[in-house]
Length: 103
Image (cartoon, helix red, strand yellow):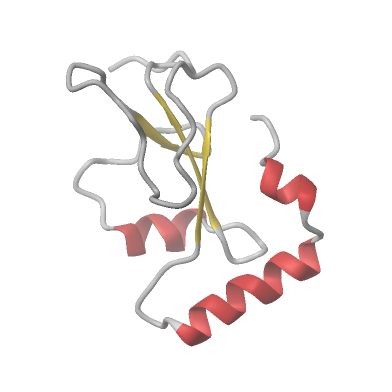
């Protein structure tokens, strides 16, 4: 698994402080970092509008620790099971099965 660019750009203490600040300010929300998978053919997320230009026939897959989480899983459960030591949940997205999983 490639290391998150967010993790590479920010030291652990700063990430921990930011996750704690988010959880304190918004106790009903989860701090999530979403990044595009390295070899993905899906465009980057528009940082201002938080959207991806994607044709209707294109599929998008969300991975947590290189695994597709169950579709019925609640974000709170995914967070509790997979949060990083810094307090963030790291997710990657791709337009194809880039991790070789069988569906």
